[in-house]
Image 1 (cartoon, one colour):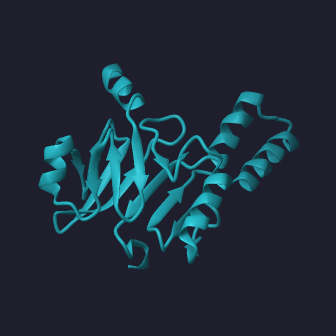
Image 2 (tube, one colour):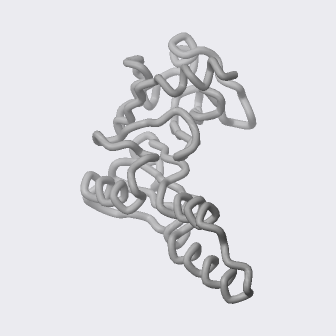
Length: 178
């Protein structure tokens, strides 16, 4: 497993919305036949309707045996580390990546989860995080008010969850309008 982690760590992954994901130069196109994907990167671990790759760091959803959605699930602590529009999806501050995606999207952004996730409709990109900064600030204050203040390490961990995206995915054109 440590060999797989090393492989994922050294991988160069670029997300190209509405088109493809490049995995070390190998293109996985939206709409590509599942058999072609499997020939390029192998068979994934199938759980439900998803195929997982790279130690569960990437998932592909197929619709009618064609790539419908590709999602990276590793967040800041996991692997692999994809880039999108030249920035690291998981190492860049959530607000900064949001601004990049907003500019590229230039249109409707869905926020149905109060800041936990956003769907950028024009570029078919979705991002998700486990917490939002306001929630963590309230948690820190509440712990202190009960006489049980959080340690610096706990506060850093919680703020990292709120200030970085945990997942990013791209879908075919119109994916978020369904």
